[in-house]
Length: 297
Image (cartoon, rainbow, N blue to C red; front, side, top):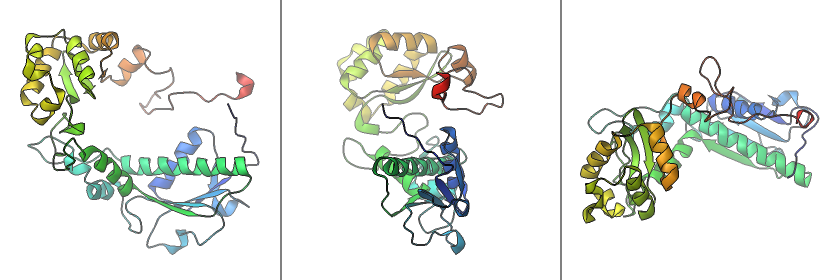
């Protein structure tokens, strides 16, 4: 395993400020990489710049330093993650079929934009570490394009059409053209089910102890069920209501079924699903792992 050593202070310069650059700095700080205003670094390896169409002072000029420009909305346009989610179609399809569309949780688009930007910055640091030099280039990343790629993925199905992606509560509509896909209620909460094959659907039916309906031929093909899942959804929910989350998880592990409980933060801690210290007192989260220096290992 190769260990990367970045010595001599900050190597990543920050130009301008928006939500995406804030989160890029946050993600980099999580792994111990320091950033600094670009003017404070004599020779940065990479620059992360805030996209701001109106403020030319924040726009990086042509430079020999690789530059990653993060846009909270769309390349070359001012706006924030709410605009990005709307433009990408993501917000429009969140919510119940008979209700209004819902927005994404706050800052989700900008967090993803910042995460991709920080990953690219790391790749450029790796390039410098391995080759001793970098290639001058500018890379623009926008929240809208990031979310649009999610929408394009999720709208695809077995018929290669995108009309099927619409608001449908907790159940994905024709996602992948196979059944089941979504969140289902059980006795004490909800579980997520992501069937990807006939084998997965068979294992899920084993988990719910094969009620009589599940052995009928018309419920045997998960690809056909995906086309019209209303009856199967109702029967599956009734079957899951007999079991608790922990019970279903244990059975899913036994049968190899793609099922996961939806646990609260307290439940995650009490069941040792996450490490101690993962949640702060205010409910915010840390990395799922701890970074320890070699001297402390």
